[in-house]
Image (cartoon, rainbow, N blue to C red; front, side, top):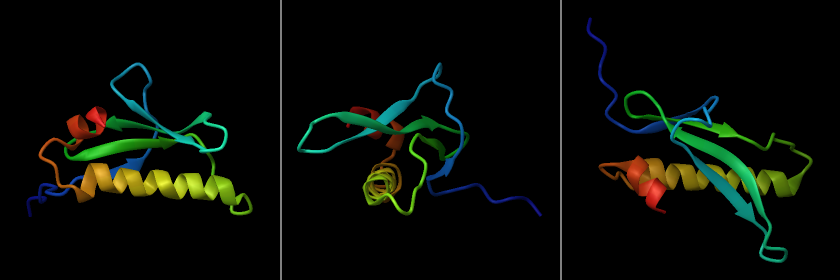
Length: 94
């Protein structure tokens, strides 16, 4: 049986090569305005993106969880839910 080609875009966690094409997702607290790197995103094979989270989940740290949850929502929105023809180009533009 021949494997089906992936028709929907998706993202997986992995290591992003900073020497290749990638974008950085940052988080800023409105009060201090400091940009904190949250994740790196790069195009992967087929219709897939590689995401490397720079913050480690810490269930006891509500602020980190808030940042990671926000980054996941943004990744899902820009890369998957919008169903753009070229989600990588769209994400880079925004």
